[in-house]
Length: 319
Image 1 (tube, rainbow, N blue to C red):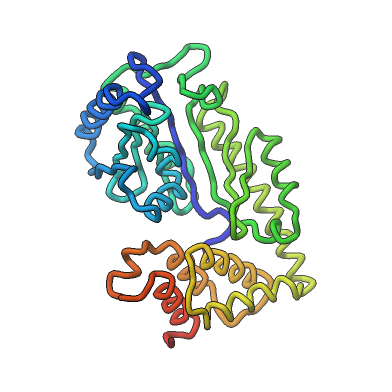
Image 2: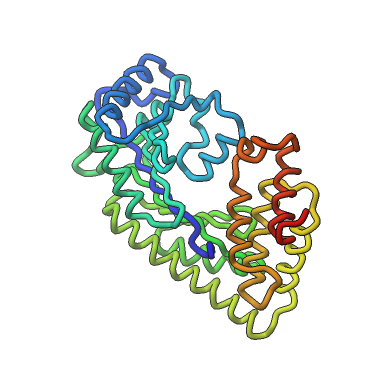
């Protein structure tokens, strides 16, 4: 069942030595960066699709941002573009705050494959122009906080018990002690990310990140186990309430579906429930189903269609 460590992403930032740090506001610099990027991508065996962030609808942009494949400020770069690999696990974003932003994603939470994929693409980009790098500081970036490796590695964690019991401060302390940050998201989710990029090797940072994630998830697991041992009514109630809503709700937003998924998973961890792990995993899938997929064969509003599918799932095929 999908739980604890949900997905992973690695972002590498690079800049060309001969171009100024204003590609997000200078169309000529942006054009030169895009020309070099296209040349590099043409040498790849994989297929990349050109994406213009300013023309993406809000839901599609949010989907790519949540996977960390696209930066939140991509739509503000005057000449910026994105090149998304067909499997949507690798993306090159150009002419933003930094000249190049390479992001790799893994839905099972594996960081090393992400790093390897991102490094392979940056290697091809380095063939089209000298990358700005200092012998003392490493890769030079628009913001000093990204200098060094130029890497941001992150893991999306599911921590509903820590959230419910207001124990996230302990997890945050674990993260900060190891040079990481833990950002709280809705629905019992948290994003663990490295804060330090200077003076450390990429793989060392990832190893530390995974170690801290393991410690935090162990704390979450122990709290769930204690709740199970004492047959915690409050925790079981969350699972039963989520189950009831899934059976009868007529509208369901994407965020509400994710919150219900979190409560269903939490319910399963503390006792017997009238639904199984396969139901929880399918609910996760429905929460991430794009609007286009929801409405392709339906005239209903996406939130209404999503709720209809959830009802079918929890009512064993009924409506």
